[in-house]
Length: 176
Image (tube, rainbow, N blue to C red; front, side, top):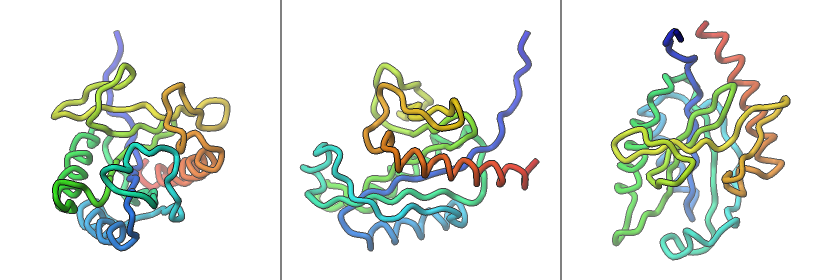
């Protein structure tokens, strides 16, 4: 019989996508007020892999990834997505979002994103939130899967997540 136990805490990450850096910065302040200090930040990245968001946001989207300093229980993903949806609504104009906010969890084994969209490979967590297994750690590096979004499978993205994993591994030493 298997023994049920709580997994190691994860690094809470967020992807923030908008047309204006000022909105991203404002949302970062609210995320920090809720979850604590930001430990890691990517550079501002152009988002041009799909035109999926074009109608709602318009052209010229930018993206920023952040990782929070305080490790969190892995079952926080639903709460993190609900807070993201609340912020997206707060930063909307005429029924259109000004920012897209996607939380996720980085662990030694995987990167999982939270989404409100169902699909064959996504697992329902509750309250309208699904878990999307985006990257798995195998052979010394995160690896994309058949459904991994193009911007998460880029070499520079994989390198960033591998670096963040190394930092996360050191963060785990603080809590063990």
